[in-house]
Image (tube, rainbow, N blue to C red; front, side, top):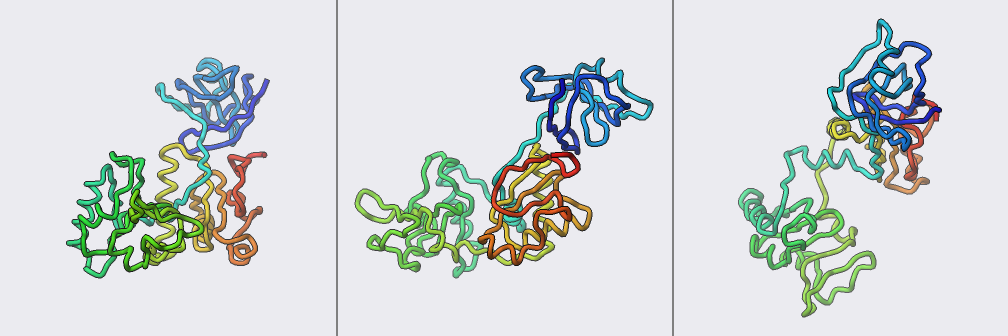
Length: 317
């Protein structure tokens, strides 16, 4: 009996056909003395696996697999460590995620007082005319389990423009609401909502309506070199935690070129397929994309989100 597996072992991800029987030729590498998670109901765990080229040859006990070793077979003692299937993340933004910290780590907030302290500190550091942006604030991560109100932001910076933002929901303080022309009588946006309290007053929370806040969320322009740095930084993090395939959502031509540049330089970011979906409609994006699906870049795919069918460009589908 044979069965197909995709495994993440140090530096290697491959889709393979595993056979409990002995291999036909000595394997290149044997990983033994570990806990191999097979995801196969009949044999959920094993002690060892052997690999030749891009195929697993055998999976079983240490004794069963080690006896297939040849003179040149590399033997890796896992010392009880686990080997798990690779993880596929179907919605990531690796370039923008890393670029958000190119000038330093973003702060982590656990409560509304921490947000207020951060704002107060920024009022002393940033020029008076500069908007104070508090990034990556999610109500589920705060002790209060809610967003701060505009009044709480006003307490920290009564005369400055402040926005607490996560890209989907934002809280604007009173000064910024006034500058944006948003009042209790403003019509609700078609693709969002101005949240009000029980008295009908604005709380400052704006849900959705990205077109209204786009200029407030604007970031500085980045260079091609910075985008390459960002992509490599995030892919290293993905590999570190066992993410072995990704879908990079809403990417643009500059992002596509970053992937292409790494590929052409022989520095592919991951040893497995990456699917990029464009930020524009296919008819608009296809005219500017530096690559598409095909043999020239077998590990990279452009187009609408879809499952990655093969874990390795060298392996059969």
